[in-house]
Image (cartoon, rainbow, N blue to C red):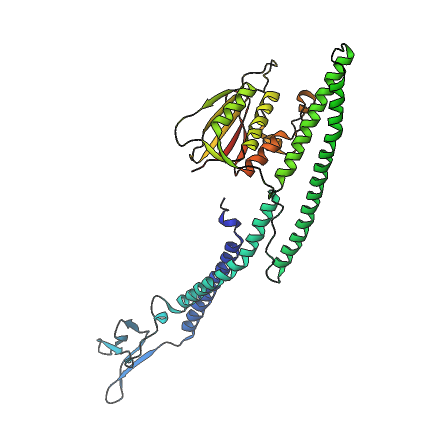
Length: 404
């Protein structure tokens, strides 16, 4: 997105220099004009006296001459006999080979010379200011990428000025934050991995229990089985999120993935209604079929968990597979008919462990499903967003690039 001109630092500095030079040119021009008029006012008037051969005055006039183009000055002198005599003072001839400089000719003059000076200074200042602010723009881009979640971004430290010092301090802080986040993720992943062993032993113990129990013992067994399944799912999601958060971590086997077939398989398992919009190139993406299947399954589970209407009835979940408007991407739309998601929270629901207010008590879940969907989409150079569904509810649009 291109920033407005008023937010470009180099343009603001350059325009300030140009404006200062323009004001200086106008001020000097005005002072020059006032000085010229003052000199003309202080200059004594010309007096023309005409005498005859006897030395008697036959004509006299105190007047300013009129400049005649190409001829010089001309004075009108009234004579004593009533006639008017025209006296011309021709312009001295210019020596051959010497022409008047163009900046002293009309319409230039001194003000024009100042304008040319201001233009030259403006053109010379632009590359200097632009080169200075390019480094600031590099710092801005790096901070924005780091704030967007790419903790591996580092700023260039060339130079010895304030910008270089700022870049060095930022890189040190970014390295510390990245190390801290890595240690926390590693701790979480290791703890989750270690939890699988006691969970496996508890599950084995439940399976070894007699199957013919009834009453409260059967209820306790079913409750333990359900809780263990939730813990197992939580551990699996935490481990997968920890692996995908590493930018250089492999995603497994990459292949051509038929998105229509993938959606049909997921809809058959989740009892959802599939709609395919034909036309255009095949809907084939390059990536990990396992991860894309996991992302679509999470969207369907989310729609099933939160897709009940006001009467508490679960209506049919709809899945649309279609081309994006630019025809180079595919859109997988999962639509439910539940209460929907408030517009202010449509971005926050993709944060890890975030759930809508009151959702944990009503629907369960741990708040990692949608976060995994976004991570999987980003690892496939795609994106996911939440919108209001037509007719009520929410729809999640998973966008993936297609193979050419």
